[in-house]
Amino acid sequence: MAYGTFLHWIYYLAASKNISSQKSGKPNAALCFFLEISGLLKNKRVFLQHGVTKDNIKAYYFEVCKFSVFITATKREHEYVEHQYGYAGKNIVKLCGLCRFDNLHNYKSVYKPNQILLMPTWRDWIARPVSSSYKYDDVSDFTKTEYFKVYQSLIFNKRLQKLLQEYNMTLVFYPHKHMQKFLYHFNTDCKNIILADWHEYDVQKLLMESALLITDYSSVAFDFAYMKKPLLYYQFDLQKLRERHYQQGYFSYEKDGFGEICNTEEILLEKLEAYFKNSCTLTDVYKHRIEDFFTFYDNKNCERNFDAIKDLVNT
Image (cartoon, rainbow, N blue to C red; front, side, top):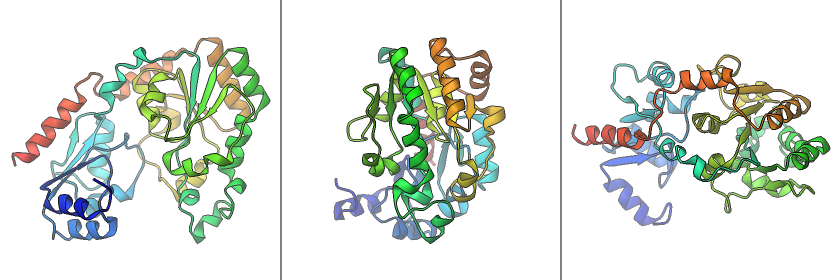
């Protein structure tokens, strides 16, 4: 069934339950939003999520979503969503774990000790530029943005390339789906660096395969930490992100993060080299943080989600 087609509309309007990992994903976002929020459409909506919520995302507030079920993965996330997002007392927010976590327990079957992953999240002001975007970047040309300059500099860095060659490591650079349209701007002459197109690479498989993750603010850090593997946060534009994209939530990278925070390319490479020297072994401080953060560590996340949906069906 093709997205946005007449058949899509028929199924959408006829369905009594709408179960999705996305808030959107409907035939027409604006019209469907009106039908749902106004109460004209009486379906029940289950939000499975596509990552652990850590920031203050107003688009997920009850008043603008009115989800029937909102799935969360951890106690802290559950409490934050319930109270900050306006779901308190409604028995809507469910602590079940994310369905996709179940498969992560099988990561050792595909693990590649010589592969690391560079997977930054997107930037709203670059991917969907408007007039106010120019306050943060020159979005008239992607190659003029700080995002491009920082990551192009990194993958072209001779020290990084030397480290990869010395330790026989491969770095896979996979930008967020919303930034993939800019991938062709990046280039490298290093055989140890792969520019990964989303048509050819699966996100979860890359996460499972890789020995270490370099990200910035992406929720894939939670998936990686769930597998108890080391990661680094490369955060060079946090102030921009907080002003334009995601507001601060309950999660503090300094106090709660699962890896070192790197604000410069030099610091990032220092930390990366240290991990290479100890075979990408997770340090105890982050191991303890991971174990304290996750409520469940089993392969019953799908089962708990199914039960939550079944309870909704029976009401």
